[in-house]
Amino acid sequence: MIALADRIEEAQKRGHERAGDAYRKLVTEATTEGADVDPAKAARVLADAGKTAADLRDDVTRLQQRKADAAKVALAPMLITELEKIDVKIGQTDAEFHAAMEKRDTTAGPWLERATQIRQSIQDAERARERLQATCTDRNLLDELNRIAQQRIAHCERKKTLMNEASKSRVSESTARDAANRTAFMHTDTSKGYLIEAKEHADRAATLEGQVTTIAGELAALTKQEAAIFEKMLQP
Image 1: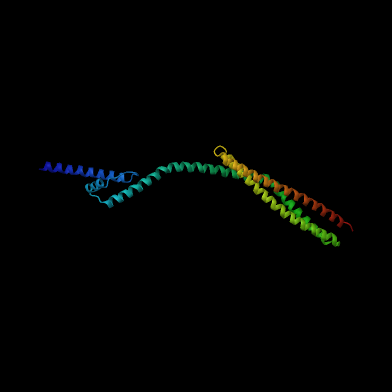
Image 2: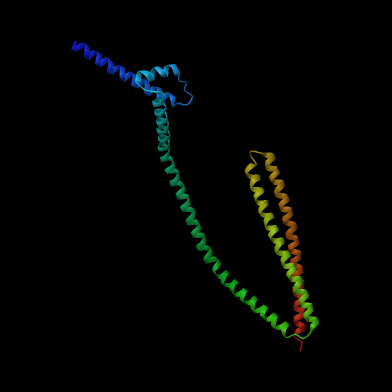
């Protein structure tokens, strides 16, 4: 009788193990995308394992989360390697930037100093202009200087606007040409479209730059007229 009880206990143990294995397999199948789980078979597995549908739902959710966590953990080494490479590139870029800034300071230093001197000289010239006009008693000469000054202001404002527009057109031209080069081997029609666009921007820039040259010539003429008037002011 004792031997029979032992065999029964052993059989029950093996039965519980088989039921547990079947349940774990069911949980795994339920978390596998595209798996077709038979509801009737699943119900028998739950009954044999002493589990409920709620138990299955909780275990499936838990295993899905564990799989997601494991995937993230597995991805971490690759991400770390990629980040290390990016950090190296950032470091190289920073080093190049600092080197460029040092070169800029070294190269531009004399230019900056000269620019400061020029600005000072321009301010001195403006003060000298004011003194010349303040000590001039010829109303006709003063009126002519005022006319030239107004024309100069208008010309300078127009020149600045045209130069800004020309610069934008050149940038747009460069952008379009880059796009044409990138698409030349894949999309011929697209590349041609970018080339047409680049030419349109180039033509517009050339027209604007021509207008800038014309205005520069008119400003030079105004400068000569002004110099002639100041020459007359030197007469006692």
